[in-house]
Length: 236
Image 1 (spheres, rainbow, N blue to C red):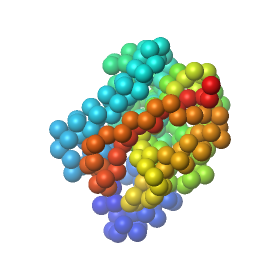
Image 2: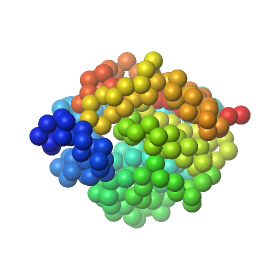
Image 3: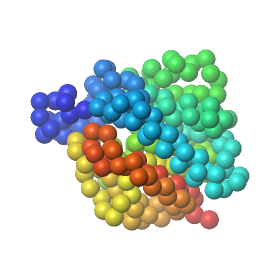
């Protein structure tokens, strides 16, 4: 994405000033599953990546026999709609609410799914509270999203909103690195350590209930960035 700017420094500043505008500028020319991860990838690499993550989600849900049939899903950062389709079709969700802070993305998806009653798409920034979502969802999905929130305070706000939006017994699944340390990776990525995640989850009455690591080390524009999965729910 930084190729849209004269220098990495210009891209870095632009993202911190207006991340929504940054993504929308990119989406104007790249609005497909492959480009959303990296325009440098082949389609088979993109498919392999998605297959890994999909199977990881199924594995995390399948560890609880009563969780494999998902009910009402909130998909955060819906992008091109891949995860909306996955939960609506593969996981047979009762309903899927997709949200994205990009107006371009949310409007395109709203048009795509407007005839499907069980799917709703809205423009929304997950760092901003949506009171009508409180206690509504059995599952929250945020793949390739949370590390794009580079401000730690806003990131913590988003985690707190997840806690409020989940029904009792509900589960959230997020993508990230979850390694030994937190670090910035390029223009618009900040990964948090597993310890930072666990501390923040605890502050909101949540606890990790599953971790899925992959050996697919190719990481889009930033090689080495992994989209591992962390599942969490309200503390028992």
